[in-house]
Amino acid sequence: MADTIRIGDFVVIVLTDGASHLPPSAYPGADFSLYPELLDETGTQQIRIGAHLVQGPAGTFLIDAGAGEFELPFPAELSAANNLQNPPTHMATAGNLPAALAEAGVTPADIDHVFITHLHLDHVGWLMKDGAPFFPNATAHFSPEDWPILIDGVPDEDPARVLMRQADGAGILRAYEPTDVEVLPGVTAMHVPGHTPGHMAIQLESKGEKLWFVGDLIEHPGQLTDKGIHFMTDVDGDLAASERARLFAQAKSEGIVIATAHLENPAFRRITEEDTWADAITR
Image (cartoon, rainbow, N blue to C red; front, side, top):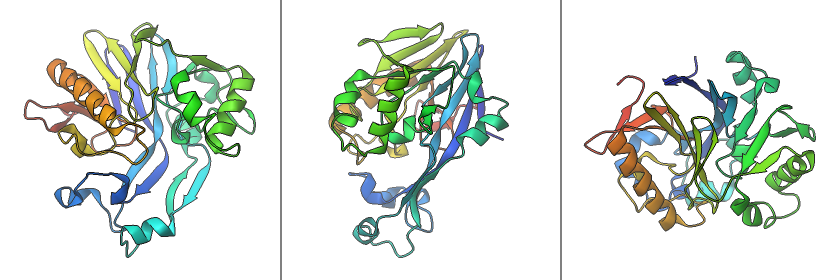
């Protein structure tokens, strides 16, 4: 059964599309001897690829859209650079999102909106399938600040570029406003740059409760307190660290639930007075 939480009138369900296996070098500044529990028998950290399903008075929508049908073999050079003795066969595999939606009792046609945190492939992969919108009735919201670097600035054959240009041609895209703005009743898009120029967090608010979908603002649990831990695809690691500190201070003060794109166990988190993670479901 997928992890589920209620925030006022909203129900949020974690959807798993697949998994990535990332070596320690993917996290510059991280000392994994302080976090031995994060590495499995392959010497990598397994993280979830997926999305969040939200159902409530504002409709049925997704936060991010998984990676699509995707396989990436584990690069030999990464295995050598990290001295992995038993590396995984794949760095990433995905394709389970349709089954996860079905398990939640939802069809692609039921989705009204997709709120994209940023334009990396593992967050937009199911927007299109075989050249057509996979969610036929949905509007996909995106950050135009990401487009010059992550779409126009990559090779023509880059999967995210191909997919997003198809989505643009299909007329399903809508750009976020340049400032924090309520996009649906109780749903606010917040600009938190650093991981990418246009990276967004999405806030749910209902009946005095708040939840933040923070995308890739945090990729390693140690980033809660260690500003020196970055991620290999951060365009501006220092800015990302500054934005994390800003949001986490508010989340701690207000008891806001945090839902990350990739971290599990727990899937929904709160920050304690001692600056540690707590499971928001079992509070």
